[in-house]
Length: 138
Image (cartoon, rainbow, N blue to C red; front, side, top):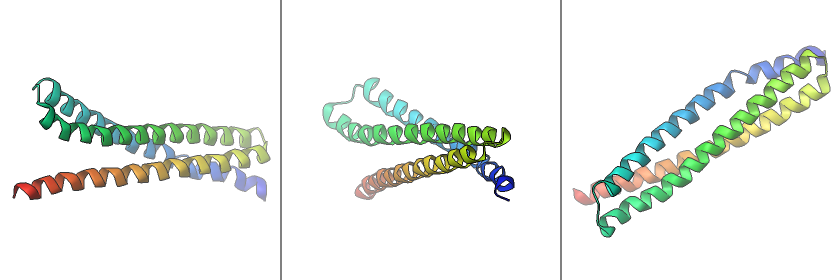
């Protein structure tokens, strides 16, 4: 009974990982666009140090977020490879190895999701600062 289920477990996780990787990739693209925009505002427009300081504070947060998204993508990739190895191990009838690889894949993927949740919290915090700036103007 255990052998028949061991081939099913990795198949359940298989579609979730690439979907999350796409989500992380979209966040990476959005962050890189924002960083380039801020770069152009500071460098091309030759902002004064006083005006540039506000943007430099944002860049610190964006740098942290970029690192977190990169970590999430990397962990998801590792989880995907482990999941593939689990499927392959099951194919060659190495069920104990398959289950261990699957368990490791799930743990690595869970860490990727936790990293992503932390990045979302930073993103929300950064957006709150922008809202505060708008409230000050009103």
